Length: 140
View 1 (cartoon, rainbow, N blue to C red):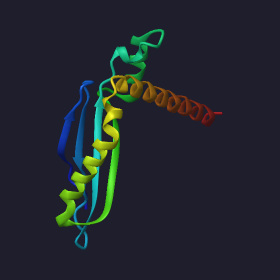
View 2: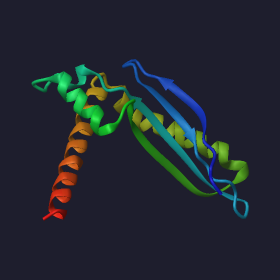
View 3: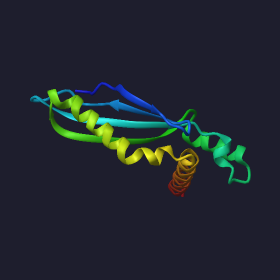
């Protein structure tokens, strides 16, 4: 059985980001559920995120060509197993509250979006280079 997604809450942060809490709990099997909470903070890449590059506009264009249009985002998935159906909401709220208590300061950092995009850009370039290497190796 597939889980249905539903947003159970969101937070708008001072740095302009929004954090969404999405319930992805699986339906009960033998009276027990896998409680799964997806935490998603979309980041829309902008030219300012690439200010440390010689040509920020070109870097942004390359980023978009590698990642696709639209936002990329911070994502975390927290799970708890074998939760009775009557305790699902309580577990979701506990997971959400734990995340807020332990991780929200990280996401609230004014430089979070720029640092996140820089790290993502590095990852995308590494994947593209590896793909190019293996594509080229396959043709020899």
